Image (cartoon, rainbow, N blue to C red; front, top):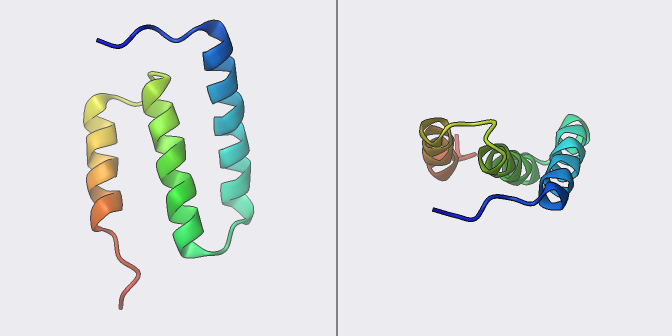
Length: 69
């Protein structure tokens, strides 16, 4: 089990998550958006806003997603 996050770490992660959420609204490059979404999901998981199962599902989708038509 990992050590609990300090209040400072939580605040930094929440700020980063808010910034990522704002960036996702304006980023048009699909690959860049995909990476922003992954980082945001990882932060949500670390902050306890997403269950392990939800993150695993997101990660599987992320890893298997392709832009090829």
